[in-house]
Length: 108
Image (tube, rainbow, N blue to C red; front, side, top):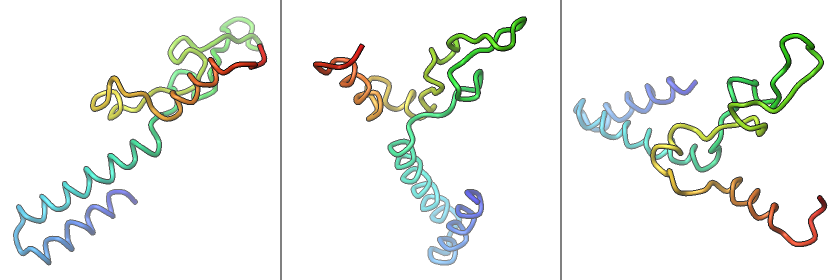
């Protein structure tokens, strides 16, 4: 699906600009805009160690579990683009979680 959208964009821009370099520039610009929009909408990916559950199962007693050591029990990691391009900026979900931790009268 994603590849077909970019192939279609490349073909359309190639027909409009009549040059390969121009069409690659248009398609690359489209890719950058859509990727940055995607990073804003979905800044996290699921943890590969625990498959997004946040739990690590025991090896001997299969019913026992603990927090996943890779994600700390959250079940998610920041996506590569957020880590590389915005290392000091918190995502919307991280800001909300921090505000919830420090709100007054929260249940313990």
